[in-house]
Length: 142
Image 1: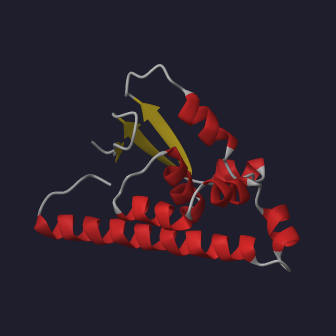
Image 2: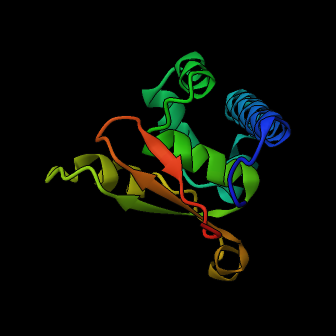
């Protein structure tokens, strides 16, 4: 939470990032398998929105996994991380770009949950400095 103070902290932080990446990759595979399972499709569709159906219709799961592996987090990948960890994301866009198309598209992809569940989730804040992929966590303790 307060940044890296030494080599041990850096190693711990790197392992935590790898663990989050692994959880997200497993979640993508799980969701893809659920959308492909014909018998469970209706039940799955009721509990999630059309988020994953549209996501896998527009994106190859392998490409999503590769982007996450390379830590290239666009808004879509950020929402996958948020859904995996059951957190809320706050994105402060400092990219000085007038184009809001990616954010509008991404906002329409947010999985539906009950309002009470979303409000109860912790918030993780990120800064975005580049229109494409450079997103950094904002540590509140600094």
